[in-house]
Image (cartoon, rainbow, N blue to C red):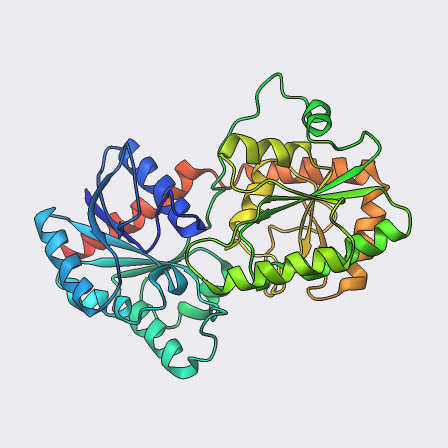
Length: 380
């Protein structure tokens, strides 16, 4: 197939949708398909064809995408949809009509209202329903969005994301040496938080819990792995500044390590070296969370929050430790208990390793390709 991918972000821009699009495109290309990508002007790639670019996502961009699809003689287009990645532009919702009769399959990454523009209300919901209804097929990357959209889309499938961090563990890797080189003492318990900073990650609760546990005498350190604001939501920069002030207020300057942006190998090393990966999402653990998928992929002992909907794959005490979302005392209690329970941490690592096997990128790409083929079969 000649497949077009439209994504509002793409590496080296920071953002989970861009990283997902890059990995998916590579796996599809490896499977023998021709991939063409339309994305942001800032995108770069040595091995993928970024044959269409734009510096904004306005009404005229729809015509640019239509002309691009015809130049590339595409069979089908896969839109990677997340509102913030397209600069909050409403025009992308009309892409099915702009491309008609060329079929468009939309992958919905995150249907939560963005913090930058949370009050769009009925208009935003109607626009998303429109996009789902007029796409030839809808792919949802998490259970919450699948439950919401399957009534609006005639052809709706659930295909979870994989980890965006794919580094393999070197045979000679030593967590103790890595920690020592970073200034972490042997007796300290290292907590790792990974991802892009925003309001939904529960960072304020994590910092307050860390401060209280350290005051009680537990030798805890916290590393922010990555931790930048990302390129899609400018509001995250302001929130990051608020966190900086909070660190000073809680006197955590010497307890906190910040890595800044890292390559995959170094991100993976920090996850392998940590005692606990702590991801206290405000709205609960979900397949939409690339940081959670990375922690699973790297066999971390994970502390996170209970999902907002039933996710049978997430098993408390087996492959992650779940606490109620927004329950700061419960988070603090769990961190204190697990810091002193290496056996339970080992159990969680083993469970994460078993769970990781179900999120292979070749399986994800294969499922996506099957949906695209099915759409083309229906069109022929």
